[in-house]
Length: 195
Image 1 (cartoon, one colour):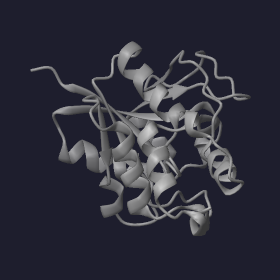
Image 2 (cartoon, one colour):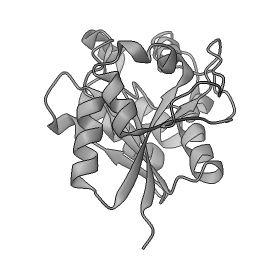
Image 3 (spheres, one colour):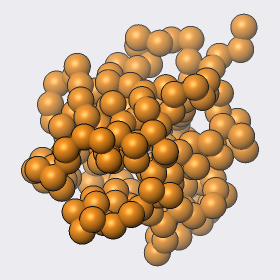
Image 4 (spheres, helix red, strand yellow):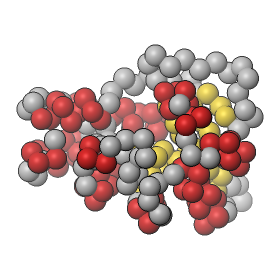
């Protein structure tokens, strides 16, 4: 049996938006991934914790956004690992617990530009595979990349969760930036304290 090629899309998803979903869709349709796991991160060590919506809410919105699409999975795997959450630990644990899968860490070119700041980044490159997708203002050439890193030619989705949160706080109608079920949930639940 072929090993499943599983993309690890780790992020705060604060909240998940159509840019996240379209990118993951592209990676499955065009880059050979069998599935993408949306790994909701409890806290990025490089971000202020006060910016985050509650863990269970962010996970719930991911679940709503991907429901019914068999190649996507919402994961709370990092919720059960020591904090702060470091990618090297997550990837090592995934490899150990799911030996039947080949995991690919999905990161933006903006994160690749900062990759040398990641905790034990050299070990990640030695032991794991990375897929780097383009972000505006952060070009990446294929020359002199480690063997474990591949740049994908996906469309550029210039949407941010920060923009979404600001728009919601201002009462803007940004329904087409969000999956319909995510938009519906936000509209039917009091969100003001979270913005």
